[in-house]
Each structure stands twice: as structure tokens, then as C-alpha cells.
Image 1 (cartoon, rainbow, N blue to C red):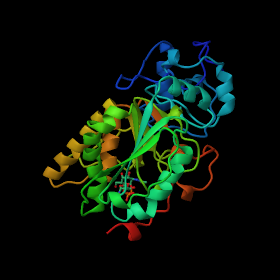
Image 2 (tube, rainbow, N blue to C red):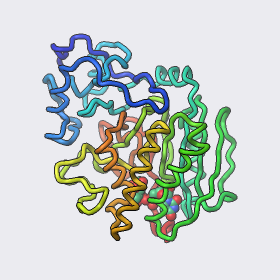
Image 3 (cartoon, helix red, strand yellow):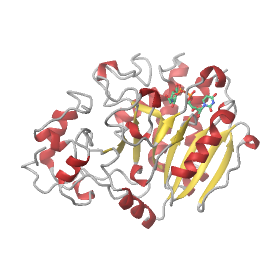
Image 4 (spheres, rainbow, N blue to C red):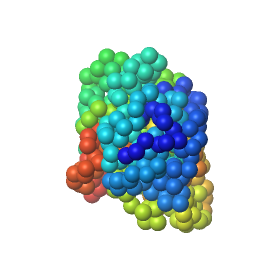
Length: 356
Ligand code: UD2
């Protein structure tokens, strides 16, 4: 890797200063010479990240940093280059992609503590998903999710009495909210957007600064800390992060509110994990809820349900931070050089057991 001659003092990729809850993503600021390489390396023209491809040109530098250079802790860029030479750590629009080794968890932890944050974690466990997955999800969240921060879990279920009562660490609470049980699993999945929207407009929104919304059929396996926080956070899908864009499973029916036209789409994001500030998540959930409703009125259902609408949202409103597949990894994919330390693992999918 060679330093960028146009930007001799580019800070390394360390966690950005957290935005105030509800405030827009910071930047872009400074270092405008980086715009072009971002576009050349990762932008709409190519459409996909290039993982594991060594490059030794100006563009290589550009993908390792953010446009919001004023928000990064100064440090010489070669250190970052040495730390993770095999991955790209910035999107074409300037959002960092968080890989293990590209941030300092201690700095992120200290910043979050100074800001006295409360972080929400929502999960739905409806029907047999509750017995099958919820206990392990919560137990491992206690071990790994935002340890040392104030956390409030929100479990949405139709059977509050069946929710396991685990001993929780200091500063951590669990709230259980009752939801109606939809008949079809697809409706359970999609209805989450409306339920979350209402919750974010209520107590959850009042008590949390940032919220992560997760599927229940997964479990934490490594530290998942405040380095992941930002105004809006999207997760690269483990199965699709290195696919060419033309193969990504976006909704393509132009009648659907979730449709992306050929050539549209940055990455394929996974609906099993998204997050952000309360205000940003209110916008996201409202968008998806509206799109799902419009589709239903036309007798349509997007290809991957809420995930299709989420992908449309993040195409229109770029996430402020992108999590590498390490943050939601599928063990069936085996070992890969760029996946160093998975933080959250998919549980085996046992659809015949849990779906009606
Ligand atoms: C994918 C996405 C999921 C969603 C879904 C929409 C993964 C890992 N996740 O999940 O985020 O976009 O596609 O098609 O690829 N749930 C219940 N009870 C039910 C049904 C669903 O609690 O009867 C909840 C539960 O939290 C579950 C989530 O909804 O984890 C998503 O449902 P899923 O895991 O069955 O869907 P899946 O695996 O196809």
C-alpha cells in the first residue's frame, strides 16, 4: 500500500465520535480529493466491494478511510493498512465498514461511557421461535452485547409469561411486550416493522439513544460493542457480500415499493440486524411499513419480505455505518481469511420445526 499523495495526513480508521441521538450523520468534511477514488473503487460503476483483492494504487488508500476525516482519531494510515490489508473498510459514500482490527474497541467503549448512553436491543420471539432460540440469544447477549454499557432488551412475543427470566448484569433490563401472533411466518417477519415503529415512538424511544433490531435465531459469539453505533447501521449479508451486484436478490418487480432497478443497489443488507438512533430507525421502520402496506394493497409481497424493503430504504438513505459479515456470520459458510472474529452467528435454520 502506498500513502495517498494528495492527502498526506489521513487519519487511520478508528471509531468516529458518536453522533448525538437523532442527529444526522456527520460529514462529509475535508479531503475532497478522496471522492474520485471512492467512486472508482467501490462506487456505482462497479457496485461491489472487492474483498481480498490486493491493490497498490491511489484507490486502495481511499477505501480504507472515511470522508469524515475530522471524526477519526489521528494515526498513520500504514498501521491500518498493515492491520487489515485484505479488506475494504469504507463505502463509496464514505461510511466506514467495520471489520475486526479496523477500530479500537477501548476508544469506542470510553466514548460511549462518557456519553452515558442507553442502548436498546429488540428481538421478536413469536410461536416456536421462543422456545427454540430466545434463551440462548439472551444469554449470549449478556456475555457479549454492549458489555459495560446500559442496555435495555425489548422482547416482543405473544406469550410474555414464557419468556425466560435470566439474571441480568448491572445496568441491564429486560422488557417484554405483547404482540399478536400472525398466521403466516412472513407476516410475523414483516409486521415487526410496524411494531418497532410504534415502540420507538413510545417507551423504547424515550429510554434508548441507539437501538439494534435483531432476528432471534442467532447467538452472540464475540464482543459486540459501541464501535457498531452510528445514526444508521446496516449489516452486510454473509451469503452475498462478495456477489456481483447483478446477482443480488433485490426485489425486481417494478410494481413493488421495494423494487430496485437494474444497476441500483450498493450492497445486499441483512434484515437480521440493523440499528441506529431512534429518529433514524423511526424513518426506516416507517418506510418499510409503508412499502409493505402499498404492496399488500396491490396483492404483492416482496421477494424477501421486510428485507427487500430494508434494502430499498438503505439504497435511498445510505447507512452511516456498515458492519462486515463478521458481525452476523453464517457458520455454514466455513472459514474465510477476512472473517477473523465473528460476533454473532446464525443458529441452524430449522424451518420445519419452527414454522407452521
Ligand atoms: C430472513 C432474514 C430475516 C427476514 C426474513 C424475511 C436471515 C437470517 N434473516 O430470515 O431478517 O428478513 O428473511 O423473509 O436471513 N419470527 C418469529 N416467529 C415466526 C417467524 C419469524 O419470531 O413465526 C421472527 C424471529 O425473530 C425470526 C425473524 O422473525 O428470527 C425472521 O424470521 P425467520 O428467521 O424465519 O426468517 P429467515 O430465516 O428467512
